[in-house]
Length: 513
Image (cartoon, rainbow, N blue to C red; front, side):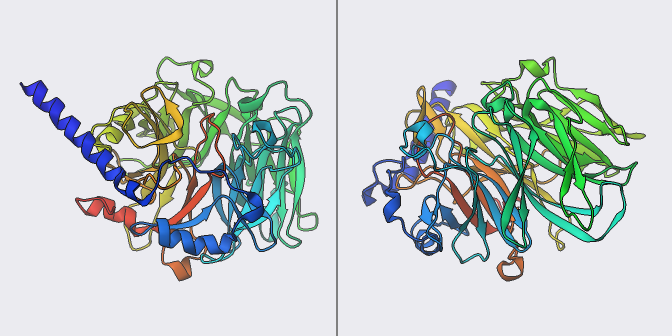
């Protein structure tokens, strides 16, 4: 009888969730899959900012961008995914891509010259997004970062700190090499540097350029920027000088080749760390640097990790439980049945560059099942980029934020209708994971929860603090979608919300939604 009663309770819980998600059917909605749009009749990006706020925003959320629209110069800002959001010199920039987008000729479009990966720019919160650059032959801009240099490549101090916006992607399907693009802020143009030349000998995901990280070599005192260029290795660069004002890159990988693509770089306890599949390496600084392995998760070899899933993701430095140093926090997703367990590695008590065995703080599949009122979860992927650290001067503790996507195994669950998987599919909402201290986690969703009348969000990829903070009082921007090898069109999105929402997650019993 106890089992029967529990089953009935779970059935009632699932029915309530589904009923809640379907309340808007009477509005005439029939699909969560976005309808094809005629790009010749698109509305202005600036008008979308206002109309979508009124029609689709809930709670403290406001929609900032929805593909596709026309900017002030008539260029189409489209895309299937927003991969990065980066503040730079008072504006907010977004890395956009067209993977699996039906408007691209690889997936059914009729114009080989467009669309290609874009960088979008927002100059004020209530303005429309602008197309800052289009990168021909690059399907999506996989990395975007604003880095600052106080020294040149020889360690000499610069006359003033130089801030540079960098983008990175591989060309074609890998046959054209891996390119870095540097924004010339004065002339508002992008300059290209090819760091991995010619044919890469591998296609697709093996060339994925997923992370750019700034770090000062503790022995040489040189400010350097590091790029994880797929399986080809880690490249680094430094600023030329006050006259040339460009980045000088190494001609060969500083570390590599690698068995699988590197997905995260993090600085902790005055060292730089890189994750490669199931391994973590520490950079040993100096004029002839090298990398030493400091950890291996479980019995998995790097080559055993499913390339598209990645292994160790989103590695970040967080205060250690004893408060004496920094621990490494990361998401562990080795394969197609990944539970997405959050792991933490604490430094040895008397040696901050040596780490103890990892401990599991939480496995997110169970948390998401509870969040969805018992809907079964079969796979979780997340921490697409760096884990975002939310810190406010008036708040003592920081909060770590990142996004996840989940495959749910229930035909009645709210899923992205173009992304079916067996009896269910990819959950339509964009789940946000919030952590406040070791093992203390909460979940919420971008724009609260999915409605049948709206395009699916699927995955939160990136979070950035508003560069317009003086006017907006601590707002955050959120961007994403994951095509997951399923065709779609114009699915990229950006929302914004107050950072206070995430503090309330830990202060109130009920969700802000």
